[in-house]
Image: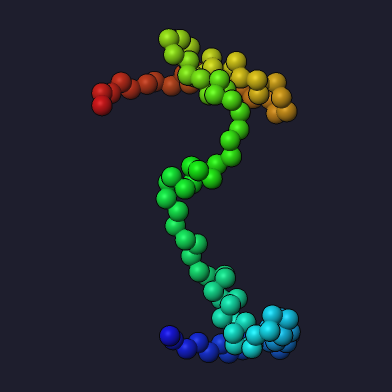
Amino acid sequence: MADLLVRGVDEVIVRALEERAGEHGHSAEAEHRAILTSALALPPKRSFAEVLASMPAVGIDEDFERLSGQVASLVDFMQASPLVGLGEDLVFERDASLTRKFQI
């Protein structure tokens, strides 16, 4: 392990570190290491499956039903949203700019 020397630390900070170390039953050096570790250690990476599994179950399946067979545009869909008219005034309009066709 490497050593770290920190110079020019305000006395108030040093006293606070020592008090905090005493509250946790550590030396000031051990408390300093714990603070640095908690502030700078990267969180463990989670798999995509773990992230999905952690999402809360909300709504019912019908809330997420596809608009299969309908030719409605996204704008039409958004205008039919129950959120329209609540709180902020949301305006959904078609973009009048030129579009480009491309194939994938």
